[in-house]
Length: 460
Image (cartoon, rainbow, N blue to C red; front, side, top):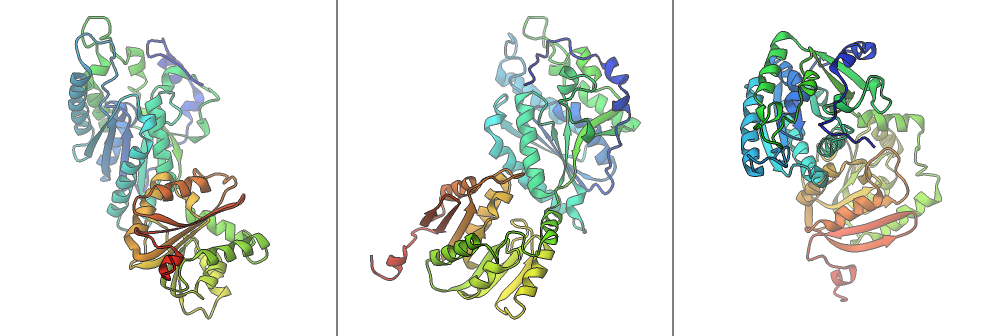
């Protein structure tokens, strides 16, 4: 675990300038950039880590959105001259002026979350970022919108608790939304050294700054006076950023750790290309039995219009079609939908639809929504959005059925238990059925007042 103090001498900038690997880092590719969202943990992070990027994007005609999570009121805890409230007020003015210096056209939002406590505010950060990404995707109206949206945030291993929390939240949102993520280091330049094995150098990309962008960054940094200069001559008012630390951000380039967009379509297309039945739906007794339990758990004998989320090759879909007048079966993989349609060529009640949910939600109301083995592929904020969409389209007499594996889900943030805990926490739903085994958890929810099967028949 990395620990450091801003009072430490830190790594000299001259050592970084002589590092051949840093000089040889590949260039950052910003071709096709339409919208840039920059998250800062504190006022000044946006300038230190991404000021050149903000200026570059604005000058290239991209929409720029800057979100600052805290007001930075904890930067000088022992100051005898400024209270936390007064320091926050000054820093709010500084960051507003700095963003305007970097990109006059940028939109700017302060969240006012507590400085030093972002680790406890991950869901709030994620909700804000999900909204910002969704709005940015809407701005990118032509094809390949996700490829033109970039989310930049502090590096999630920068070793400052707020930077790490902000970066982790951004990483989850970027993965869930399928947009590119750029992580900018700030304190890494202070505590690390060239070649440090804790740093993902293979992901590093350089953004060379044109004179206009470099000049804008210099002007913006000069506006963060509470961080670059002493508040007063009294102990406790020392500059947070020493001259040596500031040198790291006076370079003619910025460094980012780049994660390309996670392409859910490509991921699940590859899964279905590798096998005509990747989860053994047609051959496994476990899968056949689980489907039987699923169908038995449905509270009503028949449904008007059902939505199946993540239908894969359509094995459960075909059985749902026997209980519903219409089934809208969605999947993010076109190849999966091809296989499903080939399996059930005469299923006129089924509409096979290529959609990435929850973003591309189908229109209309449903009296049955089935979420089987897909909820853990969402990020936490995306799951919140999914729940909002479900509540908006579920009829008052409808049912939401969720069924999930309880084992380990490699490479994804959530577990089956996580998904169901979120469903049970939703105030707009009540649990009607709950069935738990060692392997999977199945629950059925309905809008209150939810009726049991016996109550529906007047038996209770």
